[in-house]
Length: 576
Ligand code: ARG
Image (cartoon, rainbow, N blue to C red; front, top):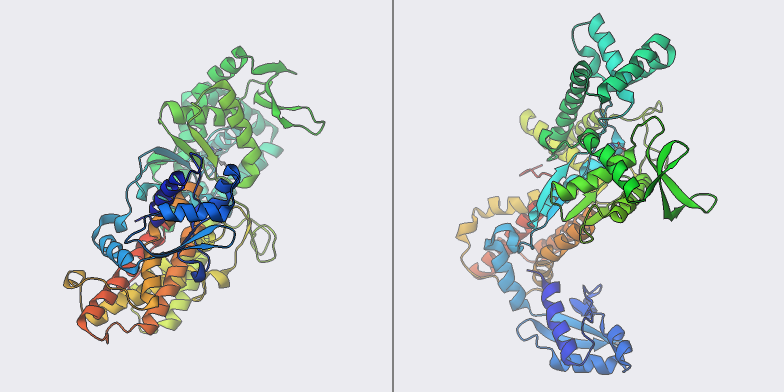
């Protein structure tokens, strides 16, 4: 049920009937304060201005045309011309009932689009580090959310699997293979990369061989291809293990690395030249863009092909957008990449649009995010100043969760403890990231994310177990609940109304790519449930009707918490 959409339709119709110009937006929003009702329409002032009449006068006309019979108990005009709407509890009750029995909590599927979600994107022969963590976590929540509301999602893991560094990596792989037949050296990719670089910088002969391999690899030499493949496979196997631990939905099939676009690049450069967009400049091929200025205030030059013939990250992203339209038939392509790459993307897309590689209707959006910072406000590092490895970070999260859960549940079996600690530890890391507005930098703080109070994963997961335990105590299952929901107490009404706002919440999250909005919703829902549970006895209700009605509210709360957390990629347990 989408209350916001229902009210918008009704009020927009009344606005038209009252003579407001076609296309006037009723601007229906959830009210911030109970005294302003459940929803308010803020669009009257704007429309009145266009019509040149006093807003309150227009508001009165709109209200006289507004038919909210059975939906609202009261409609009020407030202040300069707001329309406040107070919802009818029996209407809410009726829909709460429906949500309980409908699949997907009654959320209606949207008109399906194909959405490509570009996320995670680690680099080959490098350990995934915390910088990739935000993209992986937020991108995966986005993918789950878009899928939940009915879109076709294509996950695209734009792995950094191409570039001149592969000459040096192949040369080094060859060296270690000659010295030791096992592939142990690749167990630690960070170390492997460092050693390769060291040899490249210090050993003239090695560097020469490495440069030769770059050329050979690019021309499709079989030996170099095989060595390259090995580097890619080993890296992706390790990353796949991280995805599994993180409960992230990416699979091997989602890898669409930079190398995928290689064959398109010469054609794109030639085409940009033919279209007069790219020109030769000091031996390189460059697109000058008026939209971006350099320090001197002149149009910025974006290199699409280097002097030595090599292509660049930007050229690849131009091809990538084209491919997502032509081959994947995407209606939208969403990129979960940190904000430092914003200019890069905007330049690539400006060229894509100018060259007409995708239709105007296709949406390209950069859902960017800030950096992950340590408690000291500086980029998140290990105590010795190195980059934090994702696998170490996850180990620590689980260990900390385990200590916490053990103290709280001294008699939990070891098996259960391990499982719960895993769900809570991983959940905490993910939720901490998801619950913050992604556009800002975010401070990584163990104590905050593992707290049982506040907007954290442990709190949400614990709230879920509390609701679930009510059913155990009541010794009933869903099918035993045959009597209707009836909302009497203000806390019942508040809880049910919030439950009915799940659909509009998830649509906002999907539209804006803002998982923190879902976190805030679930957190508030858990709080409303607490208030309800304290003041509205369930097991000792006054009569069977009230008992069943309240059990149904608890059940829908339980389902909503679980489903909401699932769309974020956060798991739940039955007790903790
Ligand atoms: N591999 C890149 C990095 O680690 C991120 C790639 C993001 N996606 C893209 N289409 N450019 O910075």
